[in-house]
Image (cartoon, rainbow, N blue to C red):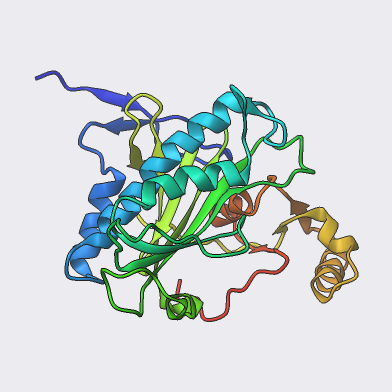
Length: 284
């Protein structure tokens, strides 16, 4: 049998990824399955298949974003504008019939998304920001998908209930995000380290890069977030402005979306700023 090697694409944010991925390299579903086996969160492995479904659907979102335009605000595929609502519908259609989730809480919707009574209702609640992008950052063609998974509290096999949404960030069983740019990168955690995967454009699989969990480096020279924050008359804006003004070597960077900012912070260190973010009790 021929020894085939797949060449890895570059990171969308210029990270240093290994140049080759062998056919035996770890793909996303295998990594999730191994993580689950070391610390299972359910008796059926639903979480493994649910995360695989989310990752698979981001392949489609990545393709739509790539075909759309240089900017997400007016990009179209056929007659379809590439918006957060469009990406939410793609994810909903996939998750509504896989039988692993019972509710979807989407940033683009005011009310939770429920499933028809006749379809299977699984044991998880999925929170998503299907297409995170800053419409004002037209020179930054980077956007992302953010997801978080919680175990439901009500009885399984029935439609989700309000009690399933009343949970803290520390109740998460899995979380992650995908960054769409020149190439597509997925980051995820199940509470035992953060890992990065690159979507191969031919194999259409997420390959682990690098072959170890990520660690955040110490840094004092970068703040990642919207530059408009420092001009806002909020406690966060004033705090960030004072910090930047008092440290002359500190610079602000913004990729065009929060997911991109976090991805840029991971290999370089320091902090990410975001308005209206609720992160209390995060175990990761």
